[in-house]
Image (cartoon, rainbow, N blue to C red; front, side, top):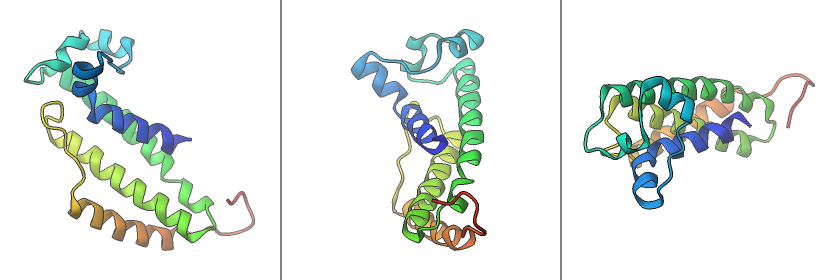
Length: 140
């Protein structure tokens, strides 16, 4: 469940400006916008204000914490191919979160490139072997 939520959040974060301009939608929780004094129109600007950046940083931090929880999933999966796929997804999602933290992603949203995908594949393979389920507990 956590992994699905994280993937959706990362998708929304990467498309904030586009969703607002094309669809007229803002998926940022109203209480968080109020906390930082941010309005939906602030996301459509050609720059990122300090209040918007603080809001985005909190969202990235919360999403990162959820990703850490989701990273516990592979150890529950006996099937190697499924465990490997999830490990790749976790790695690539973490890579995207790190890019969002380092960039003004509202103006120029980063997208995974071939290097990101190759690294995620390699990290996923390593993690899939490291996170083999042990014992007879709850395993998928």
